[in-house]
Image 1 (cartoon, one colour):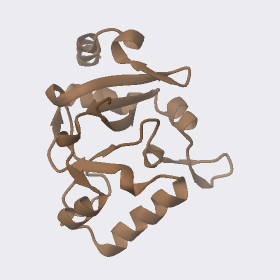
Image 2 (image 1 turned 90 degrees about the vertical axis):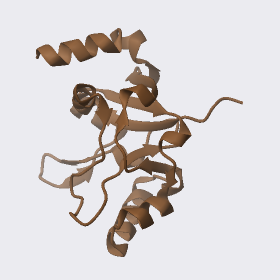
Image 3 (image 1 turned 30 degrees about the vertical axis):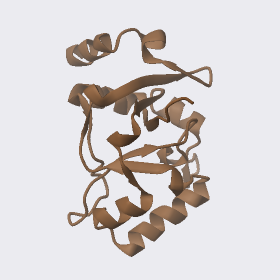
Length: 165
């Protein structure tokens, strides 16, 4: 049986910063000061629906982007794989250990369900995840996940390119 891999789903634009940092850092945007930031992963092997961000329509309405819209708006899609022990906490444990309010937890859970996500697939850690712990990096090409090296060349080239920009 193949090893289960956890995935951190992101956009190409955000991946550049992750490579520059040489690590996936805990998410701090919209996280209250009294709450522990989390590095989020998913057991979903296709796409984590909560990775879809909000966008504005032409008439000004706020909607959640689709996976393909995220690909277009975010400079492509990237996923970083890690072993399960890298992100050992499930949703309920993350909720409890992070110190998030029950209202925030309920809001995240309900928004996820609305988007078609499954909180039971969420995993995370409170520690940054350095590149040395990544087991795979893949990019979406023609609606198929392919190894980064196959699509873009060696990851070290991406690191060098991001440092010369």
